[in-house]
Image (cartoon, rainbow, N blue to C red):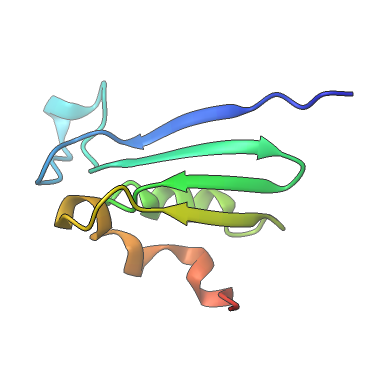
Amino acid sequence: MTTAMTLQFWGVRGSIPTPGPTTVRYGGNTACVSVDLGHGTLLVLDAGTGIRPLGEHVAARDTDIFVLLSHAHWDHIQGFPFFAPLVNFQI
């Protein structure tokens, strides 16, 4: 049995989040992409403001989450403090 990977874009904007009526079609959050690898593993690419709705989406799931940051520019890390799964973070 194989499990399909699922890719979802949670934020694709540049330096400044731009939520509002003019960005409804493509979204207004900054960089965040999730790759659900199946079998309870989630890979998160960048932690822009899009990571907040992603965190709300996965908060109740029993999932291993790996966050990879492409670089430390503000628009790629600014959402990290608002990532709901951090409440249960273990090292």
